Image (cartoon, rainbow, N blue to C red; front, side, top):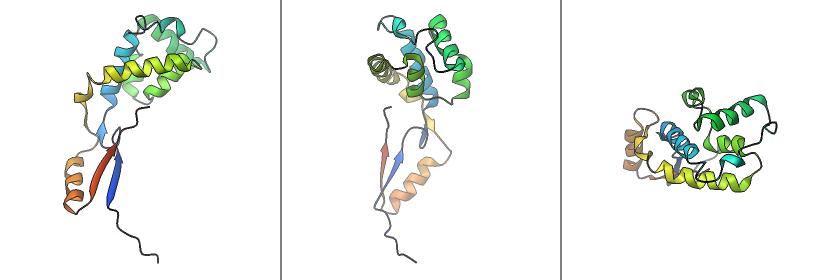
Length: 142
């Protein structure tokens, strides 16, 4: 059996690992979609007939008509903001870049709404620190 060296640093992913950031993320996406007109992104939405599939086309059409995500998408919480912007703007990398920058600004308004992903996270991190482990969390912007 191989002797393993105990870790000195333990790194956790922040989003959807340590904390439930989904609610804040979907609020920020809706805020960003509401700004598409002022950002000149409405006309850059994936054109009719250019979506990868019917489901994507329905999302683009809903956003175009209602200026927000469909409530079912928010309730299911299965799609990331990166995937949402990919569907909304297909291959328009510049439009996605603008949308992500606007999202980053809007997310700051909802960041305080996050909650631990599972009960006991704070205590578990405290016990790891008490045992001498350095704890770091990583945030993936996209």
